[in-house]
Amino acid sequence: MKLLVKNMNEEYAKQILTWKYEAPYDFYNNEESAESLKELLDAPYYAVVNQCNELVGFFCVGSAARVPYGSTVGAYLEDMNDIGIGMNPALTGQGFGAEFFTFILSYIQETFKDESLRLTVASFNKRAIHLYTKLGFIKKVKFTRGSTPFITMVKNFTA
Image 1 (cartoon, rainbow, N blue to C red):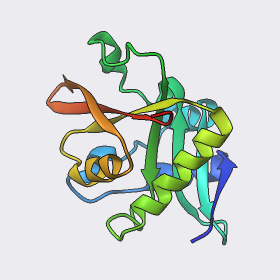
Image 2: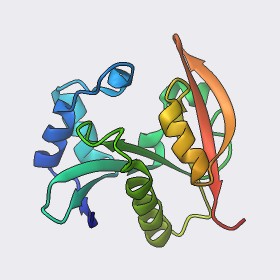
Image 3: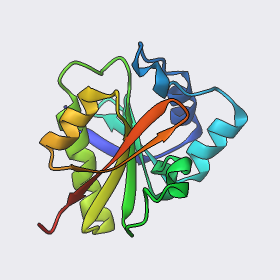
C-alpha cells in the first residue's frame, strides 16, 4: 500500500471523529464535537492516505500527543518530541500496523530530524505495545489516570 502524508483538513477530521473501534479499543473513540474538530484542525495533526486518497489514519506531534495528566506526574520530563497515531478501525488487526507506523516514523524522522521520539499508550493495548517494541521503542514511565494505566515509550534514532 502506498501511503502519503497530507495536512489535516475538515473532511479528514470529520471522518476521524466518526471512527468507532471495537472493545476494548473503544477507549480510543472520539467524541464528535466542535471542540474535538477544532483540536484536530488546530494542533499539529496530519492525515495518512493511500494512493486512492482514502484515509488510512492520522498522527500528531508535540504536546497534542501527550496525555495531559502525565505532565503532572513527571511522565514528560525528558525534552523530546511526542507522537500519537490512530489507524482507521476498518484496517486494524489485519497486519497493516507495522507498515503504517514505519511510514509515519520515517516521515517524522525526515521532516523533524528528531533524535528521539516518545509516545504514550494505554497499558491494555498489548497489540500496539507489541508493535512499538518491535519497532525499537522502550518502555519508560508508567502512570495511571483515573482507572486507566498508561506507559510512555521512547525510541532513540541515534543509538
